[in-house]
Image (cartoon, rainbow, N blue to C red; front, top):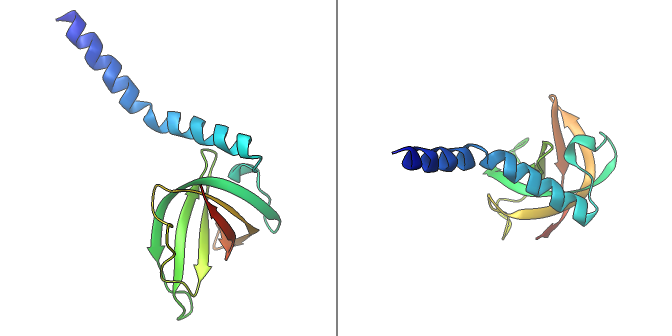
Length: 120
């Protein structure tokens, strides 16, 4: 009985620590690629960021279609916006991507508009 309980605890522990493990792995990938962690990127500066897309949504801005994606690299998140686009092939939740662009802030939300991107 004790062995079964012990295996169950180990399984639950691995499952509970999965988000932390993912963050550590993403940070290693960012460092290897020579990119800046999102948490260290300065506002109004050009930045080279890499991470995983958590969400991708179509949200009109000022009557113009805009594809928005939340980029996460283990240290923080930033919203990446492509104006005038309804869809971009390969831009889907769970995909790894590298973006280069200028970081801005709107309504206390960090944004990057129309960045260059590279699917990983």
